[in-house]
Image (cartoon, rainbow, N blue to C red; front, side, top):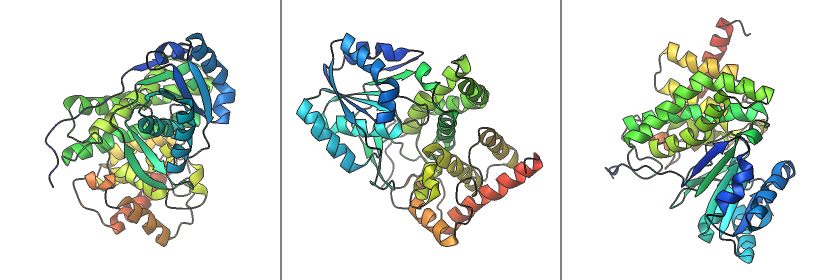
Length: 374
């Protein structure tokens, strides 16, 4: 079946970013509903729950907090829907990291409620999209779940996010750097984007701009995060990680990097201690290798990833002693029917994916040795 010829671009209803915007959450949420289910884990609630509560109360919004238990699984979504139905919530607020936000989107969709997304890190591009990544209760990737609309509100408080560990910002940069690498490959192959059509000129431009901003500002933003200060570069990278990457991947398309990430979730052990973005970073370089990227360009990516402390060797990926059998499990999971790796313009075998994963380690070590890092 041929790909649809329509061009499709989708986006959230409203995106708000700035220092201390959490104090304005009630103002924006009040335009969506008056009875809110707020989904947040204990850590986030202890950190900033009072600020959100005060803002909602000042706008006359009745709300109940639902405890997020850690995994964006079907069972977790079903459990929280029951709480939302008892409350008769007309707006669902996700307050936290990527899995919290994906869960909130799933709850809001099933309840036919408005959805407000309030990320507390800039570690993924989950906030703006009309989809959730669904995992098993044990953390293994299961599927993408698509919704009819994007969140109604995405509110990003950079004064809150700058207090998150810099590792999370680096992870978001890694996730966002995959955006144009994957989107341009999908566009070349005339593959269907996550919105169900071909990429628009705008969707393409956003993906390109996302990468440009990151190469220009990522290290400056990371240094600002380490110092706990909100600078123009920090604001730019938070926007690239969240809005540009979110719009770019959804309306541009995914390809090999995220499929290889999904393959890694089939493994057990210490790799699960790594963030989504850290695993995507490795998958991005693997795709660049499969794309026959010239050495000079490949090393530009390696240079930024390594400067941000992202895992570019199998040892850093917690897979130092991984067997070929387990690498083939990763490859076979990445090549499952329906996986985004099939958006590449060329077919792949498990052997080729395994070789690419090993090649990342080989090229990264050679580059580190050239820089005198080993």
